[in-house]
Amino acid sequence: MVYTPPVKALRLWQIRAALLWVALLLACFALFSPSRLLFPILTALTAVFLTVILWYLPRFLRSCRISCQKNAIIIEQGVFVKKCQILSFNRLLFAQSLSTPLSRLLGLRVIILKGTRGRALIPELSKKASAEILSECEKR
Amino acid sequence: MNKECKAHPLMLFFYLKPLLFLLILPVSRKITEYFTGGSPKKGFRLEILILASTLLLSAARYSAFRIIYNQSFIIIKSGAIFKGCAKIPVSSLSSLQTEQSFIDALFGAVTCKINTEAGVRGKADFRFKLNITSSRELTKLLFGGSVLSVKRFSPLKAAVMAAVTSSAITGAVVGVPILNRAGKLLSVAVSQKLLERIQSLSNSPNTFAPPIVNTISLIFLAFYGFSFFYLFLRYLNFRLVLHRDEIEVCSGFFVRKKCYFKKSAVTAVKIEQAPLMRLFKRYSVGADIGGFGEAKHKNQIILPAGRATELKSVLKTCFPFIAAGGKSIRVKRSRLLRNRFLFLPSVYLLCMIIGSAVLARKFKDFTHFIFFSCLTALFLIFCYSFVCLYEYRHSAVCFGKIVHARSIKGFRAFSLYIPQKNLGEIKITRFGMDFPLKTCRVRLTVCSEQAESIRIKHLDYKTVMAQIKKDFLSDE
Image 1 (cartoon, helix red, strand yellow):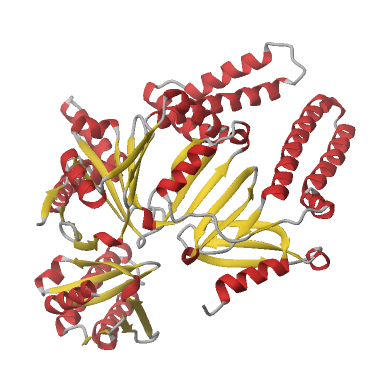
Image 2 (tube, one colour):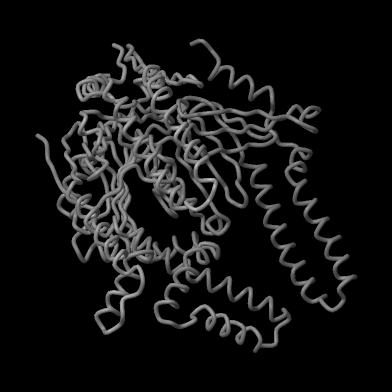
C-alpha cells in the first residue's frame, strides 16, 4: 500500500511558510527600517519565500512516498537530495502521532515511528491514512 | 479493560521548573515589591503577561496529559497546542523507574520514567508524575509478576557496602554542589569556612609531611567521609525483589528510587571488584539494560557489595541463563608473558625515579614534598603491579552461548557475561611482540547503547581463532 501527502498538506506548509515570511518581514522592518539595506533585503526575502511556497514545497510533497511492505515501511522524499529510509517492522518499538492546531483544523497528522537505533518521520497525512499506517504497524 | 489516569498536580511545577529562575522568581519578586509600595519598573506589564500565559499554558498541558493502559498497551497523550499520542506495546518496554523525593512524598506523588530501546541516550523516553495509587496500579500491571524472593540488607551490611564502594571522587561530585547550595541558602560561605578549618588543622601538628599534603589528605578524607555517609543512606533501604520474569531494585533514603526491568531486557551482566572490595572479598553485580534512560551510571546495580556466595545466589536466581560452559582461554603460564604484564608498571617506576631525581636536583627547597610524592607514586605503582599480576593470573575468555570474559579496567577486576546474540563486536589486535610470541589482544563489545567493552591481553592467537570459528562462524 502506497501513501502520498494530500493537497491539504501542501496548503498547510504554504500557510506555515507564509506566516514565517510575515514574521521575518516585520523583524526586518523593525531592525533595518531607516537603512538603505531594507529594500534589497525585503526583495531577497520575498523572492526566496515565493520560490519555496510556489516551487519547492509542491515538488517536495509530490516526492514523498510512504509504502508499507511485508517486512518494512519505506519512506522516500527529497528534491535536491533524495532520501530513502527503510524501517523494518522487527525493529519497530512504538509509534507516536503529533498534531498542531493548524494541522488539526485541516484533518492532518504526523507520525513518528521509533525503533531500536532508528526513527522515521512520516510527513502530514490524512487521519484515515495515518490510522491505516498505525494499525499496520500494530499488526506487525 | 482499559484504565485511565491523569497526572498529579505537581506536574504543573514540573512544566514550570525550567522557567523558575528565569521568569517566575524575578516576576514574583517584582510583584511583591509593587504591592509593598514600590513603583512598577519598565516592562513590568509585559512580564506579567508572559508569566500569566506561561501559567495558563502549563495548566492546559497538565489537564491534557493522560495515560490509558491495559495489559497490552500504554497510550500516553500529552500536549495542549502541539498534541502528541504515543502507543507503546508493553512488550517493547525495557524498564520503568519510579522516584519519590521528599516533596513528592509530602504531596502523595511519584515521578515515573518509562524507557524503551528507542529514544535519546541519557534521557528517559517518557517522564511524568502520578499519584501513589495510580503509580502502584501501573507498576503492578506492567511488572507485577509473582514475587519469588526479596533480599534486604542489615544496617551493618549497608555500612560495609558503603565503605567498600565509597570514593573521594563520588564525595566531591555529590558534596560540592550541596555545600554550595547550602551556603547560598544560609548566606554563609560554607565551603570557605570548611577550607579554613582544614588548613588550620593541617598547619597545627608537627608532621613529616608538608602542610599542603596534610590539607590535600584531609580534603580527600572529608570527601570520602561524605561519600560514605551518602552511600550508607542509599544502601540502607536497598532491596532486591525477584519476580518470575522481572527484577525490581529499590534504593535511596531522601529520594526513594525503584527500578523495574525485565530479565529479557538485560544485554549483559557485569561483575566488578574495586581494590578496597578485594580486601574485603566483596563483589558488585550490575546489569546492562537496553534503553536504560537517566541512570547516572550506565547500568543498574543489582548487588552493590556482596560475598562470593551471595554473588552466586544472585546470578542463579536473577540470571539463570548465565551458566558456565565452554572452554576457558587463559593466558599461558610463562615468565615472559608475566613480564609483559609487568612492563607498564616497570616503565612508570623508571619514569617516576628519573623524574623525582631531576626535580629534587632542580628544586632543592622542595625535597620533602618531592620525597612524599615519590612515596605516594611508588605505592600506587606497587598497587598497579599487583593488579597487573592479577590480570596475568585470572584474565580469560570463554566463547559459547554465553560469552564470559574476565580482565581488569583501571584498578578494578572486571567480569562480563554476554549472551551470544547481544555480542556486538569481537576485535582481535596483534602488534609488536605479539607476532613472535603468537599472542593477541581480544576486545569484546556489547551490542547496546552504552557499548560496554572488555579487553583481554596476551591470549594464544591460534586457540582464540579456532574457538571463534567454532562458535561464531560455523554453519551449524
